[in-house]
Length: 508
Ligand code: NG6
Ligand code: CA
Image: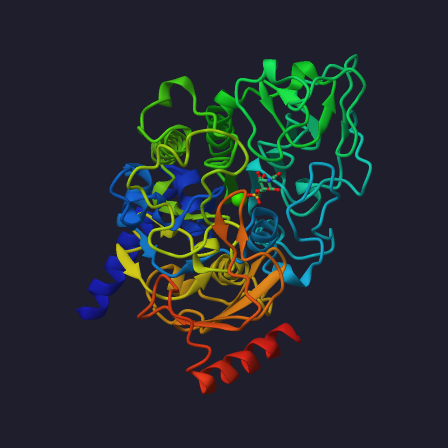
């Protein structure tokens, strides 16, 4: 009798399955591929640990990012590899520590591509597992192989290191060329008005921030005094390409639309989208509907704008029926900075807000706030809401996602921490090398070693402590989250142990 009922159930089940398959072939193929969820990185630019209300901000509310945090895993010990953009972006895509690549430093808009086309990358690995791969947003990893001609297809770039589709800004919002590039081609370029870029010399007769203050709608504080685009002085000189120039205030909406279109177009296959927002990097140019919304000036306003576009993007995933089959990783490329080269009231209107969230330092710094950033994983129905204190780094995404999607790719610097990222394990990394301005520090558990370095202890232009000191620094973040007590002189044994462990990694 038992056997009979089991076989009856089996027949019933399989006929149900068959019916289901006939009804909707597409959703059946999605279920089959459920070990290949869509993967989205939402990556912000210069967002600090304390800039989101989920991490304790009280002066600013970020409901959409908080939704990811409160319904996903909110990491309290999530790290970028670096305190600036290019190196962190190098690591998140390649799974290799950026200090292994001497070119992984803040790049001008004319820099050649610093990822080798031979190298493994997250999109390449996912492509080999059947994914369609796309990037929308900030690139800043160099393009071409030197002397880029912006009037022809620009290559190699994202499409040559694993992305099937790319819609990018080349470098940063404050650097020329101030145009969008789709699959290597400048969008909207008029061939009769070719683009010329130079990072050393201006083109004759072209206005600059230094010479033509009367043309500026935003004043520069340091750097940012070269070509003027949309009233904003930039880094680097640009001539031509008038019709192709982006609108700064529309950039957030523009990238949002690109990200939404990408998921709509690829919803019937597993996809990876690297959605790299430009906020709250300078120049901070909120769309008029966000101006004044934070009461904190443009920096706060663009954080609210970023939160809004993220909400819209999640709504699109939901409307397309993709939310419960999509792993979202949310983070930032480096810590916060207030005045990063323009007068935009970021300091003056900060009030009680603490972008660092109680950590020391900031962007550019070896102190914790340089690299200790918001880090969230979210997967509706799969990840249980959780706060994790496990140590994780963006460099771990390559090996971890390989594990998730059935690839055997595993790189040494990139630890396989998929269970930690899904919130089912708390066994994170035991150690991590951090980088700022090509100087490195070492974290093991709660301990942080900052080796002795020559150099300025403070970047006075941005008013951030860089963590640079001619003496060894040793901190225990457990009792001293804001790194106020240097224990190097008293914890001699620990210091020696940390130096030895650090040198072992740096020597490999
Ligand atoms: C610095 C710029 C800063 C910012 C940074 C890159 C000056 C004086 N400062 O050199 O404004 O653009 O580079 O930021 O030019 S990052 O987030 O892309 O690393
Ligand atoms: Ca950045």
